[in-house]
Length: 148
Image (cartoon, rainbow, N blue to C red; front, side, top):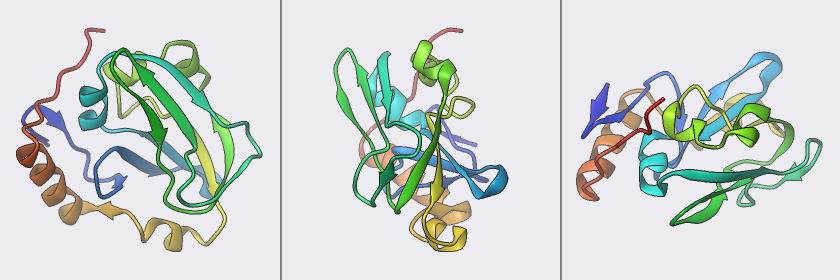
C-alpha cells in the first residue's frame, strides 16, 4: 500500500505522527524503525546512535537519535521499555534507513508493561492507514528512496 509514493505496511504499529513503526519480535521484544514518511523528510541519514542495551527508557524519552544532512532528532518512545539491542548494520550504514526503512530496524526494546498495553498507544490496520494517508496529504509529503 502507498500514498504519494510513501510505502505503508498494515501489519506494523505506528505512532500518531507516523515517524516510527513498531513490529513484534521474538520473546515479546519490539523492533522500532523509521517510516518511509520519516526517512523522506529527514533526507540522507548520516548517523544513528542507540542508547546502550540494558538502559531503561521511560515513555517520552528517545530510544535513539538520528542525524541527516538537514535534520537531527530523537526516535520517539511511547511506552516504558529497556533497550534490548541496536541494529549493528544500521549503525555501520545509516543510509539503510533511506533504502529499506521497513527492513532496517533501529533498536529492539523490551516493554516494561504487558505487550498489549504497550501496543495500545500505537495505531495499526485501517486506523493507521487512514492516518498515514491524511499525514501525507496534509503535509504534501512525497516519499523518495536512495538507490540501493
